[in-house]
Image 1 (tube, protein in one colour):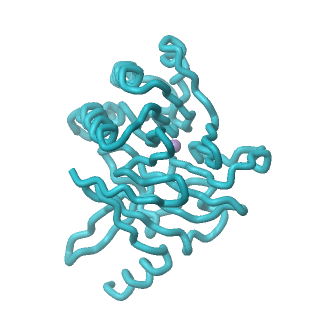
Image 2 (cartoon, rainbow, N blue to C red; image 1 turned 135 degrees about the vertical axis):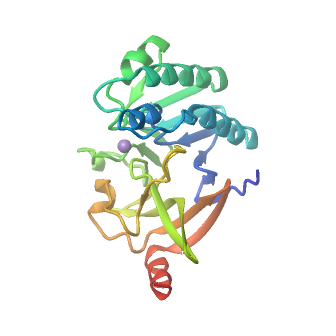
Length: 248
Ligand SMILES: [Mn+2]
């Protein structure tokens, strides 16, 4: 694989679908157990995520010196309950992290209701937010009431699962992406999902989910597409829209 680590701002790099700050590896929205919940809806897809996620983390970890890992929410998929697949996978996933990282930070997402039952046993703490220097990391499904109490100037969120669809001939290709913009005087970085069942939601054509993105226009946000471990800076959303209109 061909990693081309790309700075997205000062002291922070995009590495494949993850971010790197110091020796922290940050990933978001794994949605373990997604297959089982699709199977229940009648969509028969095999269970492959878990292995793929472990392999991908291992590949990223080999590319640089990481001691710590942050999961920025939605480690598992189901809201209300925890399914058998989730229980098993979340448990072995956290054990994998304990074997491979000195520090594990779990940030609570909106899908993570039952996570504390598992993490308590493994002695892992679940947090609402986590700070590294100037960076405030949070899932992004809701605006924290005390956002102004944080003096960090850069917010890092997940939740949105951003991707963009690019047309090439008759084919439409969906590409996961990072977004960089602003929110109320702070910089805002949105992470793609570290989940291989769905590309995510198309920020050019679908409704935005996160309150961090719904409040103001995202036309001036920068897009960094990720394809095959590589980072492709695509420019601003308004320019991508302009170009894509020329081909419709
Ligand atoms: Mn979420």
